[in-house]
Length: 312
Image 1 (tube, one colour):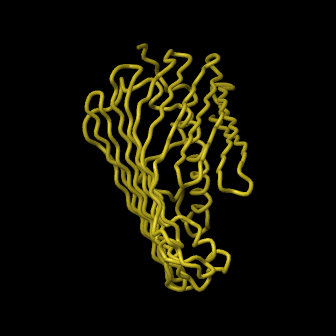
Image 2 (image 1 turned 90 degrees about the horizontal axis):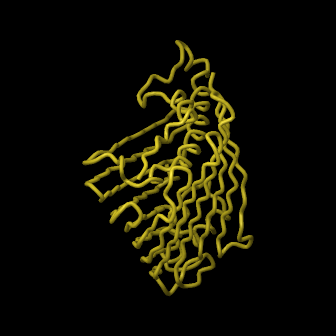
């Protein structure tokens, strides 16, 4: 398989925007007090969002595991903010990822935990999520995969969680998912795998588990008892990743995903992206995303995204 260097001049521009994880964010003395740092941090957030958009299109798995880092490695991070005075609240966020790659077998586990309290001392966030990703390559084209995730929203419980919570928000709790989990596995195949065009597809079967706020509480918003405490059903997942480079300056990607199950609504997403290297300093990405959810009144949402990076 021909090795291809993914670091283009676009990526070089993006790298120039990055900063060390623990760099001092105050750009000059007094910037915090003057409010300059807050705006500077927001500028950094925008740069990070644009960088992420380009990096998703670069797709580290496009050419297989040839250059994958081996062994055990990962990262962990924690953020806490406590406030008092005019406001009295706190927020805690923990995130981490552990990878273990050994030859043709790669595994990754990720975890995020977020808790928060509002000014009344009530919880306004209690989210826990975990993901699992594994791939085993039989050869350059054929592989097996496993995907798992679980999302837990502890505030979706049929109990009014805050004095500031509106009636509409409270009503939504009964239909929102408290727990949504999926574990699936199956085969994948690289149909095309050249320097200019790659296309891989994968499809699998698994188990999807869901629990709504009404199922957690045992009754619906109008007081009607709920018979089932949760739903467990066979789930299906299918994905397609297409990449084509027209020339040194233009390449296209099309990412399609489908998730369905017997008892829960089907979800289909498709993102078409076109990346243009206008010059050594200017790169542009235009995307069109379609999301279909079976259980919504208006089932399809469409959005257009434009990302531009200019370095000088």
